[in-house]
Image 1: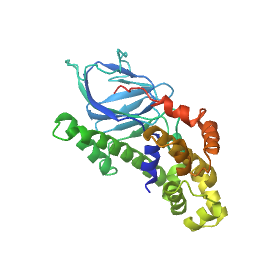
Image 2: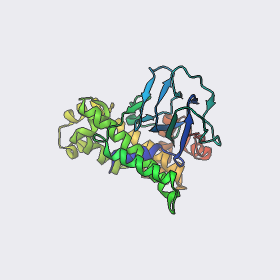
Image 3: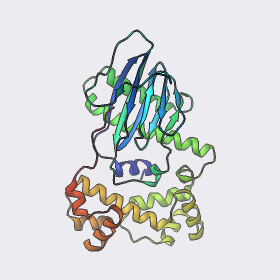
Image 4: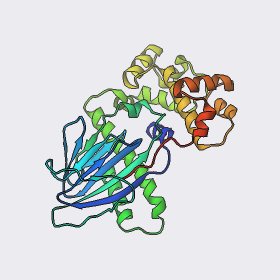
Length: 305
């Protein structure tokens, strides 16, 4: 079980979107907060990302900027350029002019508002990965493939682009966690680097319906209960059985969203012996009963890129 892919799948909704964005100086564009994640890749030229409560971020060719929670920000060619546009569907992808040309690849991933995962919750609002082809070759390769499909669509591009977008976000997160682990950081970067914690997480993800005990999880991880509890809390941020409950309900939310399985079947798949017990736990976590959650349908809005 791939923990990173599994966690993203649990909270992702809809289909990722992307597009090329070309402007000539002077230009300034606002990106309001969105219920998902987004990214910018500078293909040509340079610009500045100007967040609300963070210092401006200089972006050059090949740089990737990832917003895990879709934080609002501006993109401008210069810090003294006023913002004159707001990102919205249907706007021109390119506006010609005589100034310096900047080309970006912009994308967005729809994520459910009501669901989160601690792995994503601990990420900063903005992740800046400077262009370093020697450090993140997989990410650079994904960007190149995505750009090729967008600039010269061919048979199969409609299927290739969403798949490449999903691959790209995985490579962004992998690069971030690798850098954090190399710097000796804890949190989820530490979890991926700790074989015992990784083994425990995989076991939980593979079989959320099992009546887990800390002793059973520790045995799979190959450490004592005390050691597992200490290392799990230091990296994942909560006790093993607390994470079991979290993962069960995240899995249930995905099943309610993506399948027509009866509530009783969903309850059994995530380890609840009765529909009543499942409904009580689900409402405590999400603020509404499972049936209402399903009837509400998708909990995201279209995201402009």
